[in-house]
Image (cartoon, rainbow, N blue to C red):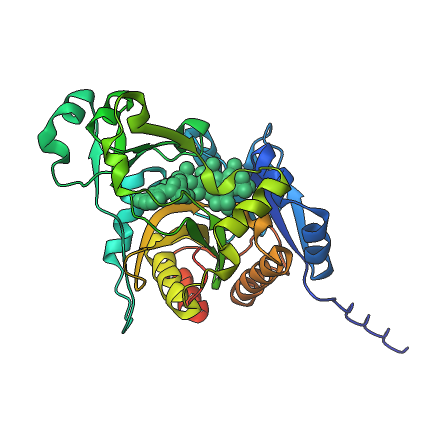
Length: 358
Ligand SMILES: Nc1ncnc2c1ncn2[C@@H]1O[C@H](COP(=O)(O)OP(=O)(O)OP(=O)(O)O)[C@@H](O)[C@H]1O
Ligand SMILES: O=P(O)(O)O[C@H]1[C@H](OP(=O)(O)O)[C@@H](OP(=O)(O)O)[C@@H](O)[C@@H](O)[C@@H]1OP(=O)(O)O
Ligand SMILES: [Mg+2]
Ligand SMILES: [Mg+2]
């Protein structure tokens, strides 16, 4: 009797990966577009919505969780998910994101960076934090600052309130401010801001409109006119005609971009120090000294759909992340024990990729 032929091993196609996403409705609408979903799918990556009414740990399996949700409850859900799926990747760590929710800790990291540039400098504008009205009206507290200043809510948690700014021309304007706030020196920068989008190791800088320069005579405005409230200047959707006019007026097309290498240096420095993969930062160039740059804001998971080719950038980001993890963990074989755990494995992976923080 002859032995039966062993069954040929079934040919396995390239691995498929699942990325679960948990986003606020506005972010989901802008970010999860068919163009992204389809491109990712064609590369073996399925984007699947996480049901926010059910426990995260009961859903999946996910190789990666992509999120921009806050609060203690969500953090607990992520902890539970991580416990049950020690190898899955969470983009990004809630503790790392939290650092961006306070405008002081957000920018502190900038001063820790050591980036070499022979001809250019960068830093943050002079700023102080004011916790109460008493300190606000105590001249000693802001003696080190020069007017005009921008008042920003200390908290930057994505709420509408956290975007409520005010340009303050002189002392008269302080009356209307509501601490806790950060008072930051206003730097004339020609009305154009640079937004630098970071997606893992990908760094892309775009120009946007900003507040126009303030003239020296503004310091003499008094009463209510001494303070100008505003909100999300670079993100306002005006009608196209007005936008076009503004762009012409500000010579936005003619504004020279900062050197890509310089922005990449800062972006990579921030990425390492913040341990975040997805963020953007706002940069302005001093109107008086063109070699001087200031970082004024850092945002977690910003409006990436406004970044040219965001679909390709994100698909590549997921592909690199998941395939590197797959090599280390063989998680394409067994989805429930997916990738990227703690300790040595994580260090090994960081060394290997040197680009993705998990
Ligand atoms: N120090 C500064 N000097 C000059 N202009 C500034 C300064 N800080 C902020 N601005 C202007 O105010 C706008 C809003 O400030 P900022 O970016 O800090 O606020 P935000 O609400 O966190 O913005 P985003 O929508 O990017 O999160 C900037 O885009 C820029 O136009
Ligand atoms: O509204 P968009 O999607 O474009 O993204 C904006 C994003 O809003 P969203 O996260 O609610 O979507 C904002 O986040 P929160 O501070 O409010 O959390 C902030 O990051 C803005 O800077 C983003 O605009 P961008 O800087 O990219 O122009
Ligand atoms: Mg900003
Ligand atoms: Mg911001």
